[in-house]
Length: 299
Image (tube, rainbow, N blue to C red):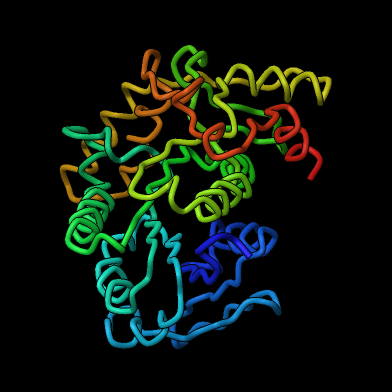
């Protein structure tokens, strides 16, 4: 068993991150319940309890949360504004810990930015949780910023590297360290947080598997494949212009453009290193960049 938190409900358990979180929670000895929409056809491991819920109904969610010690929300950015009924239900069901869908860039540090305006639902959700925790001291929270989803980005091409065409898009100088985590690593961090409930209550943690530069990744792929890759250079300033133009028209596909500016711009300064990386506090170790990149290349 894992301290005073044993029963954990995972929201978005069939998603890219949710699947990995469920795996790591099970490995750590937690009893996991996956919430799914009433019309969902998603499948889960045999040792996961599945409950069908109406995410808009506090009553439905409260009934499903009875007996749960913690909620972990891994829902996608586009749906994060819908977490309020879940928070209200968690309080009604006397859930001890809520981990909202904060995974990604640190939303506590994006005031007055284009990308910050897109992520306001995340900001407001955590603000709401913090206020509710003050009103109900037994209801605690933990925020976890993981940076970009590194392994997922390699697999789906959003990191700018294409192993099929042996090509890469490098933004600005390519020398800016980028705050990044692999999906299973985020799952391990969540398990570590819930295994140490008193130590991790009402805190916002920033974690990273590593902080690679684009040029470091390029060096690894070229060395491993034994070939020079075709490199296209691009400007994050131009990406920001495109993003802000989209945003001015209410087009939220601006997010990837603004994210590239946020993480790759020379001098962006979002790398998480030393004591700022909470993995030591949580009992985790940094991962090996080359191992992750090589696994992607040979998958």
